Structures are given as structure tokens and as C-alpha cells.
Image (tube, rainbow, N blue to C red; front, side, top):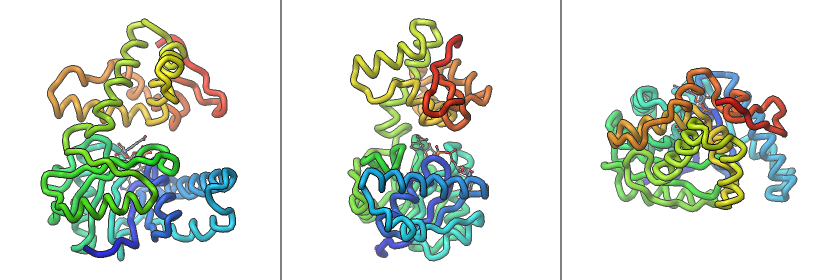
Length: 296
Ligand code: NAI
């Protein structure tokens, strides 16, 4: 298989900008693609801010920041962004139809020997692979948020992913300083299979009035040594992303235990998506001092 030197990342939101940051930091050429120009300009600002944070913590040299930023080019045109790429990592919204469509497009527009990875949290890798002419080279590469800080990548082997492709992606993950854990291709894989039922249960506990936002999060932080409470974490991930993942697991397993809490559905319908919309279980008007909301 061809050596990976150039990587296209499709979707420049929360995850896409973090993935671009890490690959550029490790010397890869990165093409960051988004259909929205503002997402690309926000992503570049976020990457620069986060690189300076790393420099303040002496994790990288300030003098290297311009060269790292130079490794990243941005595109709104998919075919331009795929030119000369050895690997594509898709990180668009967690919407199955949208992902199936973009996999068809990527397959049509990219070089035949390319590897196609998805950062999906829950959607079947085999179903994405079925949209392409190279299912042996389609794989899941599920980064954790925030990507520059988190040291783990869940690597998902689809039904047709080849051993060579799996080995290449595990090796690449290690090359960027992260640990790879391989999971089979079932809804939610390992990470969200365990995490999302906990978050959903925390939301149900709030919905039933058993505790309030601050109390539920305090119990899991102080009582279970979790670094973040589950409601705070849900706001951080994005309530729309949590709802999409639960829906995929609910439909995939046909098991009512994964049914999303009506409160989660209501909040997403109302546009309260967590940090990214300024409100979820907390109010982020003062970004440094989020306040736990009442009256759910
Ligand atoms: P996001 O909503 O922050 O960003 C998605 C980006 O994709 C947006 O900038 C949007 O403009 C762009 N986009 C949507 N459709 C597009 C298309 N057809 N072509 C080009 N760009 C398009 O989403 P986020 O949170 O970054 O999630 C992306 C993926 O990563 C999802 O599959 C999600 O499940 C997964 N993920 C999310 C995590 C999180 O904590 N938010 C953690 C791990 C995985």
C-alpha cells in the first residue's frame, strides 16, 4: 500500500479541525474541506489558538506554529480537496444519508488506491463501504474530542476491510502519538456503546426530577472520579450528535434501552445543542463560567 503523506479531511467542525491540527503537527500535508466557508475560517482560527495553547504548555515550540499552519490548505470544492490525497477522513455531521452520499462522491472523485476512513461515532462502516468501489479500503477512524488532547483512536474494521488496510491505519494512529483500539462494526462500536447509555440515563434522571443538573454532574465527578459530569460531557459532544448516535443504536439493535430520552429530543428540536449553540444543560453566555440551568 502507498505511503500516506497527504490527507484530506472532509468536514471542518469540532472534530475535523482537531484531526487536521494533529496531522499537520506531525508533518502531514492536510487538505481541509467543508461546504461552508465560515466553518473553514473558524477551523483555522481554532487550530491556531489551540497550537498557541500547546506552546504555552511547552508541548510544541512557538517558532514551529507557522510551519504547522502552512501544512493545512482549505477547500470548499470536494474534488479540489481530494487531489493527490492518500487518505480521506470523513468528519461531516452524524447523518447516515449525508455520509452515504459523500462516500459515493469521494469514491467517484478520488484516486483508485486511496484509503477512505470515517470518523463516525456510530454508523456502520460496512454500509459506507458499500457505496464505494473499494470496500477493502474503507475503515473507521474514530477520534476522541478534543483530538489534540485525547490519546486514543477507536479503529473500526468493516466486514470487508482488508488486513493490510487495518494494519496501515493502526500504524498511522501510532505515528501521530495515539493508541489504536480495534472494534468490530456494530452500532456505537465500543466507545459510544458504553458512553451513550450513561449520558442518556443521566438525562432521564434529570427528566424524572430525581436530581438537578449540578447534582447529577457532581455525583459522577465527585463520586465516580469522572473528569466531567455526563450532562456537561453531553453539552461538550453536542446534544445533536448524542441524539444521532442513540438513534443509530436504537434502530440498529432494535432494543428499547437505547431509546433517546424525550428531554434530549426536545432540547435538540429547540436548537439547544450544548456548547456550540451557547445552551444545553448549561448556559454558556459567560464561556468561562457556565451556569447549570434549572426547570427541565
Ligand atoms: P460538527 O457539526 O461540529 O461539524 C460538521 C461539519 O461538517 C460542519 O462544519 C459542516 O459544515 C460540515 N459538513 C456537513 N455536511 C457536509 C458535506 N456534505 N460536505 C462538506 N462538509 C460538510 O460535527 P462534529 O461534532 O465535528 O462531528 C463530525 C463527526 O465526528 C460525526 O460523525 C460525529 O459523530 C463524529 N464525532 C464527534 C465527536 C464529538 O465529540 N463532537 C466525537 C467523536 C466523533
